[in-house]
Image (cartoon, rainbow, N blue to C red):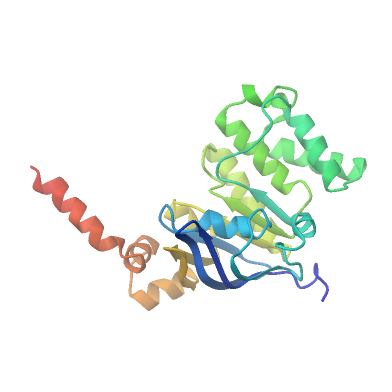
Length: 260
């Protein structure tokens, strides 16, 4: 198979446990090129674990994962050449500058200097990081650290882009830039998968929605398909209904308003 020509991210009966906790429970799903997927779910539903499995950072206990034709659990290096990943909790070297991070990561991906310089120049301009490139990362704000993490994820123009809560800490202008980058990525027949707690973002950006709860993917479809299936007015109603949180919410609101 031509990995870059027919690339998709695929999970087949994947299970991952930590101690006695099942973080991902027999998940089978695929993410196709040319689409933006939003992964939704309450805290602790398994979203971050599902994403990390695609990098080979952690290995499944059962099942198989395919990054194109690559199995990240046996060949994580090849998988990471194809995948760009930005975690929810940014992990950077505090004693290095953004410029040093970019040079280091670029060398790992084997990018030649001309190719790297062109890509970096565009990304620095888009994320408005030019004045921060030679500061120590430890001196950067949370938002600028997030922007650097996103630049590093996009640096090698990955065929699969995986972003865990990418809009957290970004101001509206850079958030808009990121949305457009994600759309451009999908338009170039690449895979985009992002998680978010902001349902309005998922509704505005994603082509497809995957809802995860207690380690399982419980619904997948376009916004219209999910709304029609559950006869819901909007994505928030869909989310609350399929995760069973609508009943809990009613109880909480009863406590709140009943206290008056």
